[in-house]
Amino acid sequence: MSAEFRTFKAGFGVNWLKAGWVIFKTQPMTFMMMYIFLVVVGLFPFVLPNPIVQMLCALAGPFLTVGFYNAVVSLQSGKKIMLADILQPFSAKGRRLNLFRLGLYQLGVALILGVVMSLLFEPITTALQNHNPEQDMNVAMAEIAAAISFSDIAIFIILQSLVMMAFAYALPLVYFKKQANILAAMKQSLKVFYYNMGPLSVFGGIVALMFIASAPLSLIPLIFVMPIVYIGFFISFQAIFATQETPDDEKSSGDGDKGPEQEQVGQTGRFDA
Image (cartoon, rainbow, N blue to C red; front, side, top):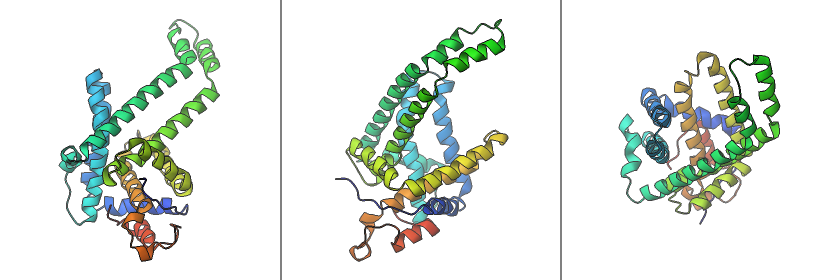
């Protein structure tokens, strides 16, 4: 059965990031090291382009991300965390199989997107491959520009966005809510994005501005910014799916804009998953 979820006003997108900062500053170095570890694992397949390595790193992704989220829960419970805590989900009996299955789904969808990308951008790839170093650069750029189809780019961006939205909340649902049906979790994640479009758009917009501001500095500030974003997004999960942890007398209304717990989550970042 799908987990119930709440809806929030657009302003809560800011509140979730503020809550992420509140938690981040308790142990900033630990969270930054966790993020760097995530990035290293994500880039490792490019350093060693071996199919087996690529598959292992892809399957490890959900475990490491959940490990990051689990560190947030530990801090909310008053515990100290360390870098090794990011590996905790690998030893979580009863939950590892579903995380592994989710990783397979992600890997399969990534392969499908790769095929779609190659089909959509085949003219651009062909133009690049046919480029002669001795050819006039203006002529080459004109050929590449002519091969670009903005409709194809729009289609790919839409597909990529849908995939990201489908897996974004599916991951914590599988681990923290023990949702065994991966497809149901993905569908639930898409519904959450639809009904909470306001706050999640604000959240995403602020993150996009942070990326733009970091660009002149070679994106180095993201080492500091992205852990806050990860924590803030997990706070949004705790708030949106808080219904099942709320006493009956406090959830008489299905509108998530009025619950006192939501104000607590938005302002302090504290809510036990």
